[in-house]
Image (cartoon, rainbow, N blue to C red; front, side):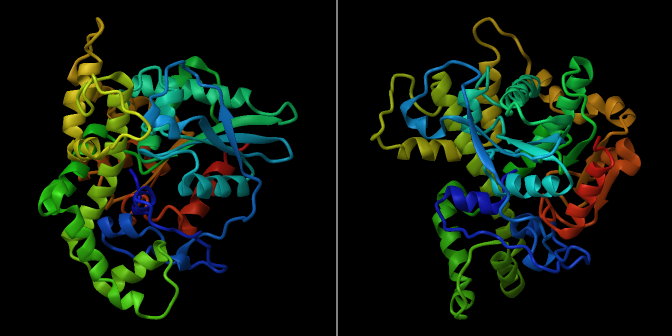
Length: 429
């Protein structure tokens, strides 16, 4: 799911680069509230020290599918991925971005740096729920059906492999992803067990959803239950939050809207749990609104934008943005996803789509494959106690389940990065 930092980026708020502490604190993750951890992330003094000034390259690929690009979505072209390649022979690790994220997100950069430090070349891929993927890589551009999203990702991974320079020597393949990207990584590994293209040496799931549809409904409820006035209450909610930070702004220190700033705000302002929950729900809704709008426009679904409206580059999007934000994930599921899979002669039930996105459907494979591990937190808001128990029982000693960290909140911590590097180092050819 999207972090608050990604949400702020989408809203146009200024961000600055995050700098790791030279001597990171390796004590327990300091935030004991899962929702707050999800918002704040890893405080600066707990961040892992990672290599700087790596030779990252943004690569553009030819579309894997041919379709017209609606004028209003041209910003999402071309299809891109991020890579950093070692000079010497090395295994290649694929990283699958979380909900709504592109291959250029901060988590892609952080995970790529950590894996590079562990001896890997790395390629970070956009999420199937990102508009660039929907336009350039999705055979069926209404994300949410796990089987077809995984097929599209698998095809993109092969295109990335084929895009490597002739001098690049790949000694093997590994795979990871975060949030929805972690769940997708599990299904990709299962698919590859039959297809045999990559034969992944290691696969690590970072804060996966177990039952994707149950997880997104939890995110929907965070917003519905905690944002007074619904979507129309967003301006007042933001104004109240900014007003509560006056003393931080008046301290005389430079204002840098990063995880350290949020941690200071959390500690000094003690925000109400409902406000923190609303922030998490709002960040998720940003991703959903973007995805739903793009799916509607690409497929002419006539749900958000009337079918007879051909949006030009200078047309106002205000009414359609409001409709997109008003759409819950249940709305997306019932009004866009299920109808899409039941038109043009197709017949896919609601129950089938839900079942395809549940890790319990491949539990035997996950339990029996000792090369697959999982990292998560007991207070991750996308999971419930039964799903935590499933991960613990299925993965056994390959499950690293910390008491605190929320959803991806402790990802950049020195402890998490060290454990990640240790996991992948054991599988490096």
